[in-house]
Image (cartoon, rainbow, N blue to C red; front, top):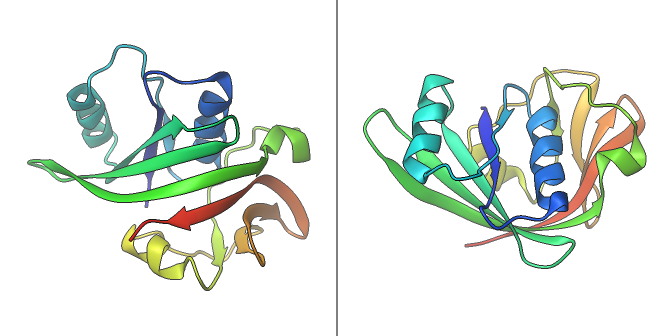
Length: 155
């Protein structure tokens, strides 16, 4: 499953950074700057790239964000899910590389339903998204590369 990560129109530098970091962390995903783009132009961009979801990231506070998942079909779109994310560490703080992840192994229990609803598939890989006691983070083999975040799923 691939996503188009987009910061909201009124975004902070950290919101753009988070959107970029998530776009390189989820295989096949892309980043798009919102600028003055309408939602319809973002939907067209997602369709051209063959993506099923747009994730609009809005800042609530400096480290708290709202993620709105918009499901794209050939004919229309709908607001699909919402989650709140608290950023604990950026990739830049944990690992100084912008290497894009091509395959991702998923290792979690509580967040499993949320990610399976997004058709995110686990693939055996050196890269993994691991759910710890109270946060999720990306790893390369045994090394945490981030970003590290808490995710609160909306019903």
